[in-house]
Image 1 (cartoon, rainbow, N blue to C red):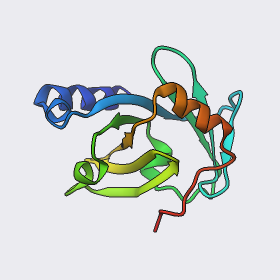
Image 2: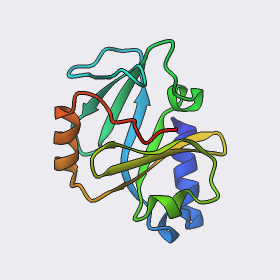
Image 3: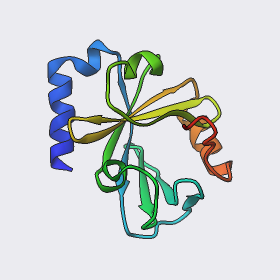
Image 4: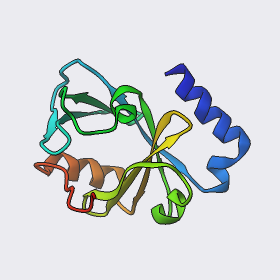
Length: 145
């Protein structure tokens, strides 16, 4: 976690985040602990639980045979909101996506020099997003190759 925070600080200092107008969205934390109100994704074989608070966070608990890349399963990630996902991922090492797991919420996960970084394009407010996520039975994965 310390390395991830240092990486984000370095990105901020170098101007990569502000230059690209990337904005903090949430942090994702792998866990083996069962959390309240977990939602299950059949496709990713993953449980997700949203943590309320000032710092938006999601806990992700994976089954052993989860098809997600090891980098996304094993390390915490920062999710940054971007204005244009297709432009933001151009030239980057994409390890998942892009796809639209929730309507009006597009996602890609990149390998940023050994750290997972989730990039998000959405017009949904936090309240709309978390409400849709809670109400949706599973993540939409039809856009994945």
